[in-house]
Image 1: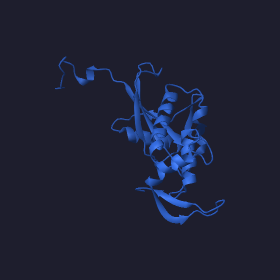
Image 2 (image 1 turned 30 degrees about the vertical axis):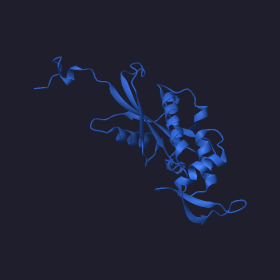
Image 3 (image 1 turned 90 degrees about the vertical axis):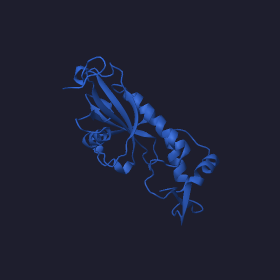
Length: 212
């Protein structure tokens, strides 16, 4: 016999929404601005997403959707927020669990199915995908404000302060005072003892992130 609650209703007596996952995949192209990966659907650009399958975790659904729709593997999604407005999807009652997935450009091997859009030039997007991008960007920027390359977006594990500074400026979307940046970040880095070659002027020291 099915268990019933204080109102005498079984679980099957309640209406059930569909559950979806939508992911803002953020990256920084070499020398370019912070950008989001978009896919085409019904003639517009949108975030890669999918409906949750029975017996599947949210993280598994994110991974599946990114492989199937964008050819992206090796991601570590961060859960951001549940978008639950009853009218957010004209197909029916759909809750969306939004995720952030920062990736290196090298992880975007299959560019044929995706478009890289600067977050400052986001076109109109369906559902609440623009809100998801804004929330993901805010989370990414908050983490970069305190810690050096927290998601490993730099292409190499070793880097100079200048390379780190350029990445953080791209994420922030504005210039960052060099001296202030160095004072905040350098104590969190570990010198490798090597010098970067091929740079103009005095060779720069190379670092890795603390704990890397």
